[in-house]
Length: 407
Image (cartoon, rainbow, N blue to C red; front, top):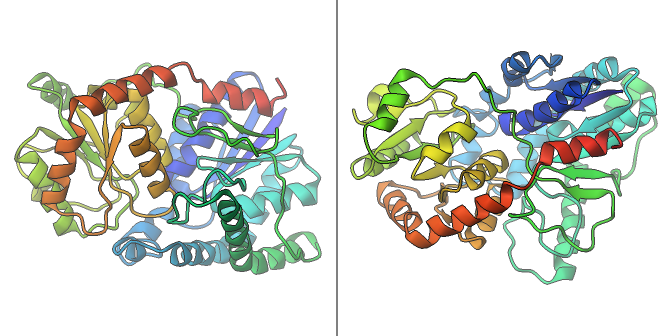
């Protein structure tokens, strides 16, 4: 079999599909991933055929970029969706052309992220089976509101209505350009409404998200899709020495999020570092390490599954992948959500009793120190260990690829 994986977004969108593609190849099948250029290095390391799609997600998240400016003051769902639609509008046709070229002869297309509608359009035009893949739940349900909406504890009917309203809003923003590209690339007539009742795989842990009872049988929660552990990976000597020199430190890192002003972020990290040992991952923040206190150790990309179990707690942005990695590690979190589904995962972890939420909007040193203190309590540490034990029995990559290959 040959499976084409298509996504567009941050590393949190790309890496899970690389994990699935790697497993497909390990089972003797062919796979190809199309995604943002930032994923190319990970694909090369795993030996996965990769095509970089038009666009530059890292630039979009820098201050002044399409998303960087929004995240500074807590983007509303409408503003964030419009920014996503604008990015997709600029690239829909080249994404579609690239996907058409790669997907020829494929047995299935797996689509996600901002390229989701493109994946559906290409699969329809080439008459190839397709299945959606996501790290947060999008299938309409009465159980909860759409993760991108700041709504909480609504009646079931209102949750379902909110899903349909979000679906219509997204189509109104993405649909016109998608139809133009379908006409130009495939000569296809315009669609009046989005695709519905699509089979979906969700790379989420059932420990953090129970499967809604009103979903169809072809919508599955498989468990998370982490990249395979690099067996030969060794930490830098400076990191090993730091870990051995004292008690477990606090990890602080917000991945691709760049929405906190650098001075504010430095103040917050410094406040925690005045009381605790700190490892800091700058991610896409652009922070100059020279501006941090001398005791803070600055990390490059480090495998979360190796690093997080060695931490006292993890301060992160609440992205799906990082949230699951922290929960698997059995340590508490301080979740600092910026936008999108991050608030959803912050709530899920807080409800499970393994995290404290401290929204990015209005964060400062005092607030972050207070959140770290609360997350350090014995109750949260015990809950985190219990959640990790439950998640240890999950193998989301295997379950998802079994489904893709018909096993």
